[in-house]
Amino acid sequence: MSLSKEFTKGLWNELPPFRLVLGLCPVLAVTKSAETGLGMGLAVIFVLTCSNMLVSSLRNVIPRKVRIASFIVIIATFVVIVELTAQAYFYPIYEKLGIFIPLIVVNCIILGRAEAFASRNGVIPSALDGLGIGTGFTLSLTVLGGIREILGNGTIFGAEIMWSSFRPFTFMVEAPGAFLSLGLLLGIMNACSKSN
Amino acid sequence: MKEIVQMIVVLSVICTICGVALSGFRNMTEDRIENQVLMNVQGPKVKLVLEGAENDLIADRKKLSVNDEQLLLFIGKKQGKDWAIAYETVGQGFGGDLKVMVGYDIEQNNLTGVQIISHKETPGIGSRVTENQFTKRFKGLHIDIEITPNQCPDEIDAISGATYSSKGVCEALRKSIALYPEIRKQALAN
Image (tube, rainbow over all chains, first blue to last red; front, side):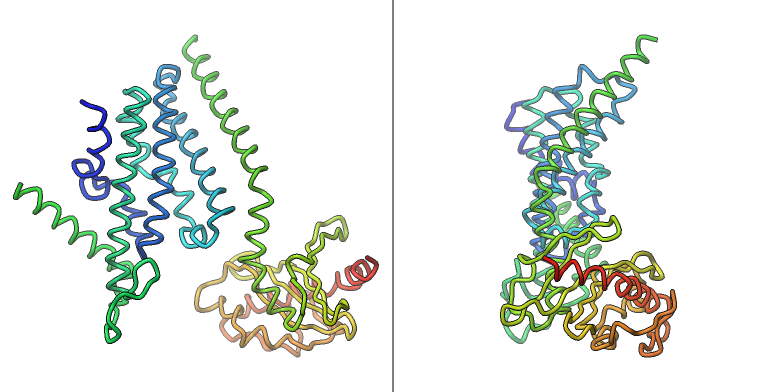
């Protein structure tokens, strides 16, 4: 497989929330607005790329029986780095994401990529894989967050865009709205790929 | 046997390196994080507690050590003179620690205000102690007020349905007042 394919597969064929249907907990929880979705996505890109690179460069050193423990330690380290950075430089976003930043440690996309891809491939393909999957995840979260924010709040990235008589469906920014919009997007994507 | 040793060594090395890297990173970001928390969490509350102060409360903060405990002291000034001080104490609420910031007028020895910095109370029930409705009841109390441990003084009505949380705030206030003479002395000394 060519290197560019490692990157682009994360954008459509293996788009995490919709194709792999992995990591749904943060997808549902932090997509109240496009901004939080994007913030969460960027955090995941960083953790995923770094942990993929490190796991892949250590793949011949780590004994198979302790690989999961080692992966988790590596992932947790990068997550704490993200958490401290967010706290030091992007405090408002850090407050909004709250518990979901530390929870990236147990996000199954990241452990899944470490186990399924990085531990079997070289450093460069692993980095591209992490970047691609991470970018796909970020785009999905931003789009989902954007849809929910527009319909539920009448804004996008905090800016008013709907006409003045528009009454927001508050329901969309609450939990049921997350399930509904995720399901509809999933359906649309399946329909698209079927007609191809 | 060889495999077990290898497993132990590899995992230990990875954990050690990660630990060292993280503690280094933590040292790098510590000051900034402290600043951010002050600006975003305590800052707005301190402004409410010391309402009317004319100086930059966060820039003028001081670190004190009282009874071997570190304490952050905020000093409010009016017309260039020290007017009031505020610091945080902890009480036990229904769900856990209740951190309460209390401000004192150092001339008249009464309370300029009380604010809840952080809490773990039940949303909608215990969390009502953070509302102005409750916190404004403390304003103007004199420090001579008598508070029995874990009780609210007669002057303060606990919120009905949120007795534990209200008592937690009063308990934090009691601790705060107990420290006041010592802290006032230190604040005036420097």
